[in-house]
Length: 237
Image (cartoon, rainbow, N blue to C red; front, side):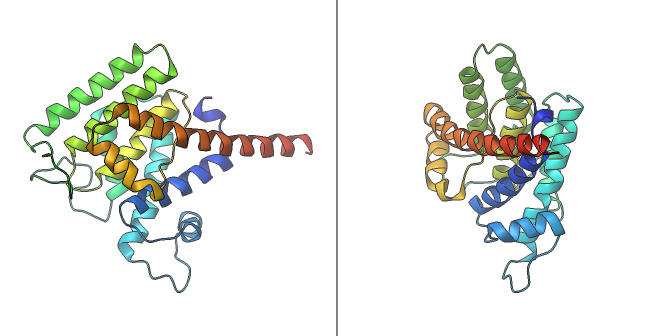
């Protein structure tokens, strides 16, 4: 299904889930009900112990999500410029170099490998985007496309092109490509963080495909419920 055929209520639900779980993977403590309040009303419920940083991490997902939908509406190709813009919206007000590649070396806590050097990052990102676009264009099946997307996600996280915000950017980027290719979406739940991180660390493409497929099945079920609601509304108009 093309993104413009998705019920607007489902897209709202997807945004809330993405913001909550993707930020939660990075340690954000804001609850799902609090996420709804932030997305809908741009405020936290009284008594919330969340920090302003956590608030911005959630709210920024709304701005990045809206930008993503605009690019889909314009049928914009996947480029490094688009990736930088996603990062800009996700990290606005949170870091001084939003939307710009790292200029200093960075590391992933607990990882047994080195991320790409700042010097090599631009060329590696160009290669990543070119290779992904080529593979998608020449893929015959949905599974081939999902393999290309998950493999690129692993490579993206190992390059770690930005000083911070790589995980949130990478997960939103996956959904941009899935939407562009009319594939089922996915929300990696924060409760599965340990398995997700291990698959990335092991560069386990096949394992990550199976992992992501399970979340795609969940999203397909959620979408079905929203489509049924939409049909019911039309029926009783």
